[in-house]
Every structure is written in structure tokens, then in C-alpha cells.
Length: 608
Image (tube, rainbow, N blue to C red):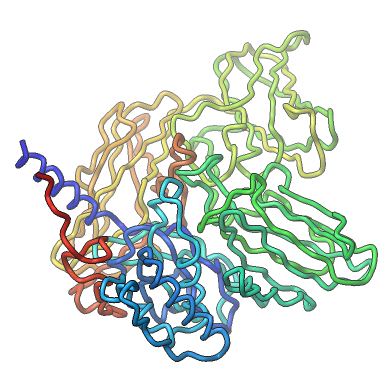
């Protein structure tokens, strides 16, 4: 029994070691073009990371350094470290003399490589040390997916095109799913570094020059405060990116960071507030100051939660620039298409005011089944649509469609299942199609596209992984592939090979909606490819129908729902020798072997 247990534990450890690294957050989430900055990247499985890549041109990763884990310090060691840190804050980096009292038990103090060289650390590292020293994490609330962090230095060329990139960490066992990284044209300002309560945390510099980007991170119990120096009547727009950086969090409820913005005047009175942008949790606040002076901007989670991946960036710019929710997503937005070769009637409209309806006349030239598909939330509109099909004689609707039922939650858009999709059998004649908002809301942004067509067999293919790391002379990566079928299609789907790669197995059997396959390299030393695409084919109606395989990564939300989050393209990397990877560094053990977590390093006596 004991032997079987040991084998099981070994197998579990092997699986854990073979997992891809996970990047949970990047703080700050971007760098200005022409600047170099050191980012804190947190996640899981980062100890074996030796490199990182950022998609597009003009961004280079210069170095990576793992942040050591900080064990709890015994009382005398805590006081010694605190005294040293206070001295450094006053400008004296000399290590204090070790206590001579036998009660200090100096020979039993915990070991940590940053503690040993406090006098050599820069301000950012010192802040990390102090936070770990003074704020011990609640292990019942700590997230295992964020238990490691590393410092990544990134340089952005002056001519780098502003926009969203994809950051991936490369480790010995694989490559992480992408995380958004933003190259901005505007200068960026980060919140002040953490400091213990007996030393006042320096305030963030007042924002006077616009545009600028404010970078912050909401930790437990924290409200960030910024100072905005504004002129009377000088309207400003504050646009937040937070949920978009991490759309789905698996071990938090409601499964995403929900920031709120609050502006206070000199007397402390609230003069503006925003906690969303239509249905989107990332707030946009347009504010016109009633007087000259300094205004306080407060940023916090709407439920007053906090954790390391609650990262945000607020763009502050002069003028009124309300952000249309149809153009806020940092992630690709694959809009479902009508089946190829199928005639489609499309209607466009806007539910222009609260309580309004839009009506379209549809001519069914012959009887039979028709598909009705409203594109609203899937393309960023705040419209929560309801579609009614009314017959030639009027009266009670023949069919009413509200929310779609999705077997696979796919796409980056929030609440895409609010779009009505359904079929209805009609006789030849003239019909009225009525579109309205379920909650009776409306406005210029409440736009939609209504598509009507005959049912036709079709399919989509999505992956649950978009990043692949190959070792030299061995080339296979496991992943899940999903087939989304429609129009009665139930046949087999073939995953097409390329000159360099093939799938094994290459055929998803008829009636199968998910299959685990391997991406296999046909080359002994596959070359890195950033913009890799794959296709899939099936026989429909005696003809071959080919679709692009949508690269995506699987995320869990609030312990319950799985989502396929799309990326722009597949990314493939390979290394001939893991020991030769750049940025490889010696990582000394913070504790001598065998001492584990016991302060004195002694083995625990066995119970008699």
C-alpha cells in the first residue's frame, strides 16, 4: 500500500513539473514607446522560466529574475531585518550588528538570498521584501495560481507601434498562455511603492500633463489614491482597463476584477463616480471640474476585494471621449459567419431610446425552416436583445428568441450568450421581425445586426491552447480541440497538416465535439513561428468546406464556467538545449537541503 502511494505521489509530481507556466498578471501592464521598465510578473510554475517573448516588432525582453519565496522570520530575525530596512530608508545601507543575546538564536534564523544582501537591493526589490516581511499572507485565502513572481525587464523601441501585444513566458516544460501587454504612446505613471505604516508611503505625483496612463494594483483592503490637477471646465476622460487584462479568474467570485472610480473635491465631497461602461465592468468616467484645483481620484474594487492580479491602467486624456463598448476589447473578436454559399438577409438597426422597438419586414419566398441570429453583445453592443417573429396576420408572435444556449463558451466578449439565436418554421408570406431590449433600455450605442437565412450544415474548430514549446528532436504538444457544430452537421472533421506540423489523431470522429490531440513537429528542430495558422476540413454536401482553426486558451471563471479565450495566432517555440537558454541564472536554494520549513533545521523526533 505504501509503495503504491509513493508511486502515485511521484506521478502527480511528474505531472506538475510538466505543466506549462501560468502568467496570472503583469504589473505594470504596459510600457511607453521608447522606455525601458522592469515588470512584476506573477503566476505559477515560473521557477523554470528562462525567457519571455512579446508579439510584434519593437519590444525586447532584456532580463528575467525570479523573486525568492520569503519564509516567516522568527521574532529576533524580524526585528533585525526591520532595523536594517529602516536604516536603508534613512540612507544607511550598512547591515546592523547581529544580536549577541543567546535568546536571539541567530544560528537558527531562516535563510533568504535577498535578506542576505538587503544593502545591495534597489527600491523596487526592497518594497517587495518589506511587503512580504510585514504582511504575511492568509494561507486560507492565498491563491496557488499566484504563488510565484519574477522581475522582467522590457525595452520598447521609440518607433514601436502603440497597441496591444501578447506576452508569453517560456519555461523548461512549455510556454504560458498569452497575457495582454500594452505599448502606449502616452507616458505612464505607476503608483508609489509599498512601505510599512510607520514610514509614510509617498504619494503618487500629481497628474498635470495629459494624456497619461496611471498604472496600479489593488491588494487586499487597498484603495489607490491619485491626485489630478485640473482646471475649471476642462473636461477629462478616464478610461480603465482591468477586466480586459484578466477576463476570467478561476478562484474568485464573480470571477473578475470589478474596478470603481471615485473623484473627490478639496473638501472630500464626491463629485463623480463610475463603476462600468454600459454593461462592461471596466469603467469610463467623463468629468468636468467645477473649479480649479486638485482632485482626488480613488480606485478600488467594487466589492472591496484585492489580490495581486487586480491590475489596472487608467488613461487620462483631455476632452470628452466616451468609449464605445464596441471597441474596448483587447482580445480578438471572431464574429460567427453565415454558412458559405447560403443566401442571407441582413437587417441593421439601433434601439435609439429607452422602451423603443425596431421592426423589419421579412419576405419568406417559400415555406420551411429559417435561422434568426441577432449580433449585438458578440460585437460589443450593450443591447440585450429580444427578437419576436410576427406572422402576416399580426397578433401573438409565432416565436420569441432571447438568450442563446451555448454548449461551449467561446470568445472574449462578455455576456455573448445574450444574443438571440433560434430557428422557426414559416410559411411563404410577409413577416414582421421586432427587436427590442430585454430591460427596456436604449440609446445610440444599442445597435445590432439581424441575420436571417436557411439552415445549413457548418462547423467551427477551436483549440484550448495557443502556445507550444518544442524541444529539439522531440516534437509533440497535447491540447484539446473543440468542434462547434450547427445546421445539423454531425460528420467527421479533419485537422489539416502543414509542411512543418501535423495532428495526431488528425480526424475528429463524427458526433464528437471535443478530442484531445497532439500537435506534432515534422522537423527535428522546428523553427520559432509567431503568426502560425491551421485549418480544418469536412465534407458537406459533397464538397470540401475548410475553416480556420481558432487559437484559444481555456480559462475557468468563478469555480464554475470554462471559457475559450481567443488569441490572434498560434505561437511555436523551440530550443536545442535548455541549458543554453538566454537569461538562465543560478538560483541558489534559500534553505539548506534537509531543513525544510523548520527554523532550527532539526529533524522532528519520531513519536514513540
